[in-house]
Length: 354
Ligand SMILES: [Mn+2]
Image 1: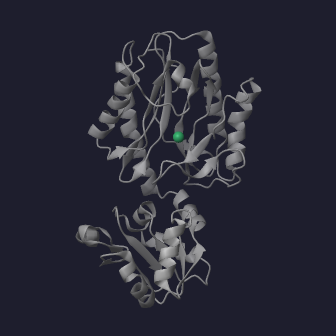
Image 2 (image 1 turned 60 degrees about the horizontal axis):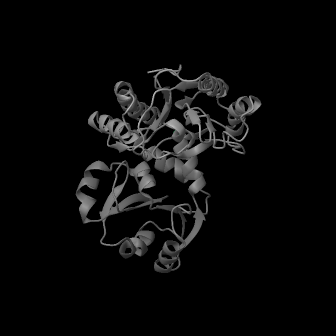
Image 3 (image 1 turned 30 degrees about the horizontal axis):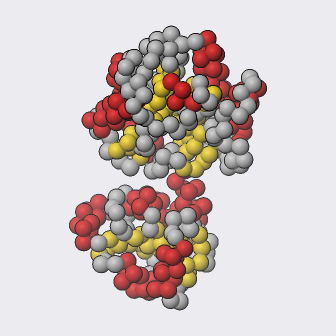
């Protein structure tokens, strides 16, 4: 955590004396402590985590990277804090603060200027994962895989989407997940053509696809995977589409390595899918970063000019969606290395016909 604080300070322009961190996810990133209320002040003269009565005792035990102090309201301590750490120009999270919140803080702080947006610097820090962060994400992924392997036995004609979604969530939580990464997608039949379909009362039928996109959260870190399976024998059209998505996914995985841009990797999947005549049937990005948030930098999408670096974790999740018929998506999570990538997803991807 100390290293993160120092790296952020190194990256901020010289004329900025400190950083005011208010978002829960970035507070957790810099302190390792999770709370619904708090404020992190990082400065060149020292750093402090401020929180209220509900959290202060736990924070004092958990936060080792900086001082801790109690407040009733953040606005009560802002002026003194800025004076104590001799801050005149403080960076803030432009992506997080609302216009009215920024206004309110600026009024309270008087002469101290909220003069620099630090979103870029924090995002660049967060998207390179330390070995410990990779381990946590892998551990979260193992929980999701455990759930999927168990739930495959339950997917049979008659069972509903909601039942499978709940079962996946129950199994992940029972195995130790602190939460699900996002609203579980477990859909079947023609619903599978909805990339973010919502599980409902629809029942599984023979010959349909069943698509599951889900993940677990562990120690604050997320996992993300998608598998599409056949319920009994599927049609030759379904098979062909599945094989094409799998090919796009495998080729994109092969293309990933440090130095490539997100757009270059995205173009591999898009080229294969559109080249086979499915233009317009794959209109979301090929992948995204995963970490303390389920969707974060970097992106694998058209126009994503950012280069990949070792330690970045991204998903690779091409799909083909045929409205009113069916859809297929296959998603793994990988960590970028110097010469390629390491797949953090262990489950097979060959078409399963249950
Ligand atoms: Mn995803």
